[in-house]
Structure formats: structure tokens, C-alpha cells
Image (cartoon, rainbow, N blue to C red):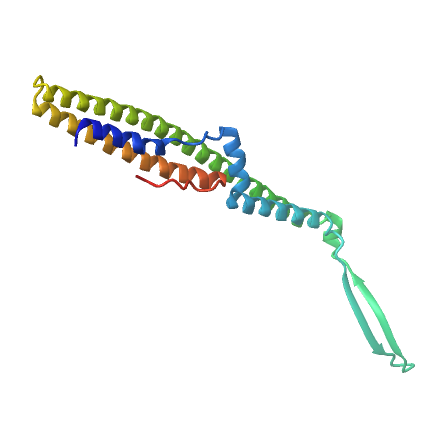
Length: 211
């Protein structure tokens, strides 16, 4: 393959590397927090624990209701009655033990939510930084491919003019092939990083075809 043909092949497939503007870090974090099922479950556990605390605060009055009926042994008449009982300790302490247990469960649920949020934020930061790094690497690889293609074209011109050797042409071909290989590998890695980022922030998955 001549240098001219190799340059043309690069120009045909290079547009795949273009990407939409990357979300800002704050927007990415906000979307990831809103999209994450783990965050939603942790928030639901906090809401449940808060309801449990409210119920415990109002649970100091917990009467034991009993209905009884029986015959009077003296008069022979039937008696009906309603008996109410109350746990005196629960009444005097304001249901303190149950309240403390519910508040402990709420504290644990809030801690779990905070940990889950921090873990997700760290993941978004790392994935976004890696994505930016891969985009920079891909740009450098594309530049290297262009430079090696130009070098091969020059080697072919010099060889045709008998001012260069065939070994120089082969060397330029090998360098271009290596540069294209690294460029294609960077595209694949960038695609995987975009998929991971899209999954985190709840965006549609990238649909571009891998070369």
C-alpha cells in the first residue's frame, strides 16, 4: 500500500473519534446521584427509619384492650365489660427504649446513605477523569498517525526519486502500522469508558461502531 492510500484510510476512519461535549463534573455527579438505584434504596431505608422514629415517639400510649362477658352468679344476669391496660414503664419513660432503638437505626441508615453517596461521587470523578485522559491520548495517537503517514508518503516519494531506500519505506510502513494499532486500541478503550460513564449518569449508551 502506498503512503497516499494509507493517509486516505486514516482520513476516512478518523471522524469516529469525535465526541459530544463531556458533562461538567457537578452535572455528572448530580445525574449519577439521581440515577443510582443504590442511592434510591438507601434513601428509602432512611425514610423508613424516620417513620419508625416518629412511631416510637408516639408509642408511649399503647393500651391493652380486653372485652369480657360473663354471668352474674347471684343474679343470673349477663355482664359485659371493657378492660384497659397500659404498660406503666412505657408510659413513665415515654417509650424511651423503643425511641432509642429507632433513632439508632435511623443514624445507621443515614450513615449508609452518606457512604453510598461518597462512593458514587468518587467513582464518577475517577471515571470522568479517566475518560478525559483517554480522549487526550486518542488525540495524541491521531496526531502520531498523521505524522507517520506523512513520513511514509515522503519515504515513497524519495524512493521513487531514487533518493531513498526501500528499507526506509518498510520502516515508515511499520511505524505507521504501529501508530494505527495504538490509535485503534485507544478508540476501543475510550468507547468502554464512555459506556461506563453513560451508565453512571443515566445517559443513552454510545452507539458508534468500533473500528
